[in-house]
Amino acid sequence: MSGDGRNLFHAAADCFRADDATTKVSLTRHTAAAWDRGELQLDATEAPASYGRPGMPARLVLVAPRDVPKRPLGGSRGAAAFVHAIAHIEFNAINLAWDCVLRFRDLPRQYYADWVSVARDEAEHFALLAARLAELGCEYGDFPAHDGLWQMAEKTRNDAAARMALVPRYLEARGLDVAPGMITRLERSGDTATAAIVRRILREEVAHVAAGTRWFRFLCAERGVDSEREFIRLLRTHGAGRAAGPLNDEARELAGFTPAELRALKPVSTD
Ligand SMILES: [Fe+2]
Ligand SMILES: [Fe+2]
Image 1 (tube, rainbow, N blue to C red):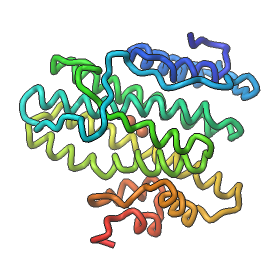
Image 2: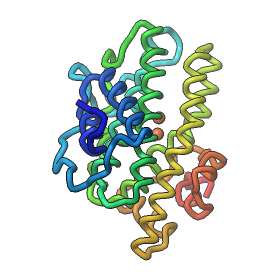
Image 3: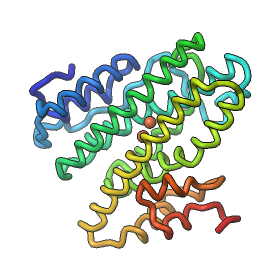
Image 4: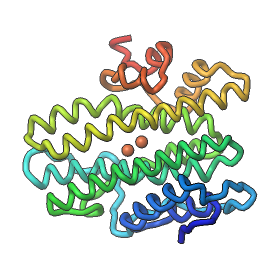
C-alpha cells in the first residue's frame, strides 16, 4: 500500500492499480498529501518497470460507446445514469493522471507535481459525483460504462508530447466545451445539485488542460519543434477530429490554446 517515505512511482502505481473506487480515492488523497509534505522521493531508477492496466471496480460493465444507454435527464434513474457517465470519466481521469506520472520518467520535478495535483482534483471530482449518485440511490458500477476512455492513453504511451497533446489538450479540453451546455440542461431539468458539481469541475479542469499546454510546449522546445504545428500534426496523426459543436474559447484561451490551434479544432462549418 501507499505510504510515507516511499518513492512517488510506487505510491502512484498503488493508486493506479486500485480496483475499488473508495480505495483509489483514499490512496490518491493520501499520496498527494504525502507528496505535498515532501515525504515521497522522486527516483525513476526505483520505478516499477511495468504496472499493468488501470484498476477498475470488478462489477463495472464496459460496453462500446453506442451501447451506453441514452437516457433523458428527467426522472431519478435518468439523472443517476447521467451522473454515472460523468463519474466514469472522472474515475478514468484519476488513472490517466497517475499514468502521466508513471509513464514518463525524465521530466522536471514540477511535471510530477502538476500531475499529482491533477490526480487529487480528479479524485475529488469523482468523490463529489459518487456522493451525488448515493443521494440518487445508486453507486459507481450500477450502469454500463463507455469502454473507449483508455484508448488514447494506449496510443500515446510511448510519447509524452503526444500524451499531453491528445489527452489533456484534446480529450480533457473537450470537457471544457461541453460543460456549459450540460450545466444549462441540468439547471433547466431542476438538478441544481449536479449542475453545481459540473460547474466546479469545469472551473478546475482549466488548470489540467493548462498543465497539458505547459508540458507540451516544454517538450516541443526540448525537441526543437514548433508547438502549434506539432499540435496540429499530432491531432491528425491520431485521428483526433474537429469538435462537433462550438468551442469554449474563453476557457481554452485560459488553458493556453493559441488562435491557430483553436482554428484547427473548430467545427468545419464555422471555420
Ligand atoms: Fe475532473
Ligand atoms: Fe481533468
